[in-house]
Length: 150
Image 1 (tube, rainbow, N blue to C red):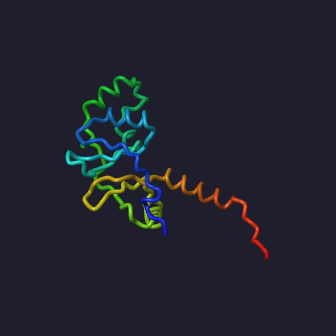
Image 2: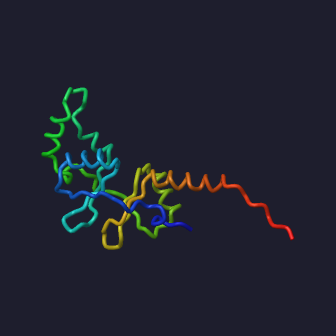
Image 3: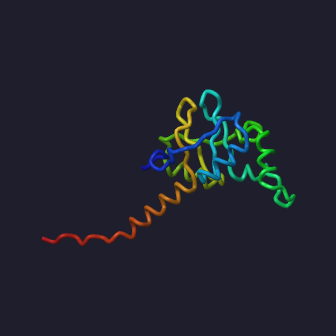
């Protein structure tokens, strides 16, 4: 059976809990990620900030606030003040079906992957699962070779 390590994203872009929301916005915009793992000073995983969370801390466009004003506000809000800390995680060795089932049942967009010491080693996202699904569908579409008859 496949495990989380087989499909997880290893190219992750974590931030530190003492950084501010403007750094999160810049990262999400630049690297096109929707989930940012947060680390403490010792590099241990301590939380997560999603694009949806960030939207909740935005001044509404309906308030006619320009991006520069939003950036100024964001520079004064530390990630540790708004990140989610009660985050379900998984390990690289976890059965893939179990991890995907957990994401589906709990409506998680991702599961941070940590090692036994609490260090972040990857992340599994709904995008990783979609990529796997496409690969599996492509395999189903491959032409079957006719059996060799002697």
